[in-house]
Length: 213
Image (tube, rainbow, N blue to C red):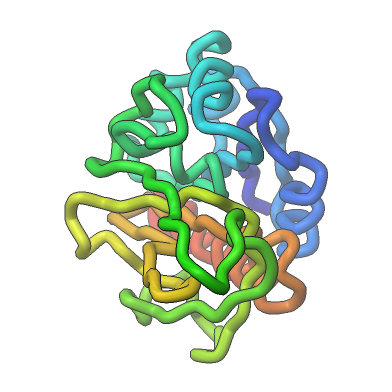
């Protein structure tokens, strides 16, 4: 059974993320230990709340380098919600620099008639990279649960793995680059389709582990 480090920095919905991973057949290890992150088969970086506090918590716990090393090592890495956003250079939500792992910015939805901010509730994904492991066995009509006022805007549009439309704005809802995957929605709150995503991630982790043996 794969061991997945779920990074604890006081900004994540750890219980829900862990329950979803357990249902998918993994052993989640909630940790802020650099050595445990290093030794895990994969890493999940969850997150709820605001950008600046999240980045400050990461740095106060000396987690920036372990996160960078985990991604550079090639092991599967999944960022969720704010755990995706802090991988970028900066956010319009605050003034702290992000981790700069994915070039680009985190931007606020534009106000327009007929839409609410935050973007909250169920919405339909449009796959930009339809063949990545995360989307295996998902319908092209998959709906996910979102709660956010800000969205990631990668400099290289090729890393966008899925988009979502809110009002007239179509924005990045997921990114994928090599071993790094990030989603703006909450798979752990997205019913069977979300659990399928977590199961796909766990299966991908297992395949990666066997390939390295």
